[in-house]
Amino acid sequence: MEISLRFPLQEIIFNALLGTISELQLRELTRLFRAFAFPIVHNKVRAGKLSLDYVGLSESDIVLDCIAELFRRNENNQLVELANYFERQHITIGECSEEKLMMSLRRLVIRVVTDNVFRIYNEVDPALGKILRNLKLAVEKSKEFYLAEFLGEQFLVVHSSEPLLQKRTIDTDELQIVVESNLETGDDVPEFLTRLAGTLTTQEQFQRKVKLISLAVALKIGFERIFTGPEAYSDSIHSTFLVNDVKETILSVCKSVCAEMKPRYVQKKKMDEKQFHLYFEVIRELLESEFLDERNGIPSHYERLQEILPDLTKADYTKHHRIIFEYLVKLSRERAKEKLKTIAF
Image 1 (tube, helix red, strand yellow):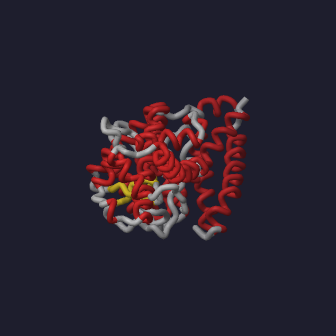
Image 2 (image 1 turned 45 degrees about the horizontal axis):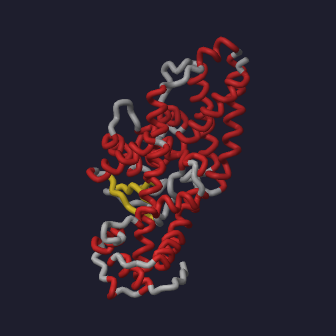
């Protein structure tokens, strides 16, 4: 990023740390920090990681909110956050080039903006903020994960195995499946992280790292679902319309989801077409068991898939099938529930 300043950056920083910074120099420093911060906020908004409607602020407002702490002064008029940063980093300003100082300040702004986005979420959603704090605290003591930064985003990275950075990052929907399949009533965050690490370590489809904010949101949704309890669809279905209607609805939903998701998995060579269609044979049977047998004695996902793939081991299921298959099951189930509700009466 090429940013031209009216004063040498070395001079601005010296004066900021000495408490002698002029108003013109302060404006230049503000302009520099806003230029660093705006792309970070804009990219988060564009990628759906930060909702303007949710937080009730514009991008410009968020930028100013995030960098405001960098201009906090002490009784000697010094910019204390800058002073603390350069002291912690052991940076001797007089020995640094303008380019190196620019890079150092950019790193500072990225960290501050990332931390303050979490703070903003905490202010508008205290439950999410609490989960974020608990995740950070748990990771500090965790043997399974460590916290790392990639392009300004904080990630939980599995400690003990290859991170598979050549693979794609797990997306939001698939992450939700992984979270809910590893979440149990009464869990604390460290217990959950231990199981999550096991799932990520035994699969090879995705990178073995997850975005901190995405994981927090998925955990919040997962906790809400556990404590709300499952919805009772079976009774109303049986009392309202015939079994054949349910089967036809489930078949229709499975065909629709199969057609929708086929480009994502088959055409992009993530799995062969035969396996993909086998998935949906199993999904149809699972949904029929769930909606027509009132959830009594329904086989696990692995057991049902093994009926069609007899040589499938539990380890192979976990490593090569679980995340995508259970995501497709969840998607089909939700579509079926909605469609059954709309035609029930």
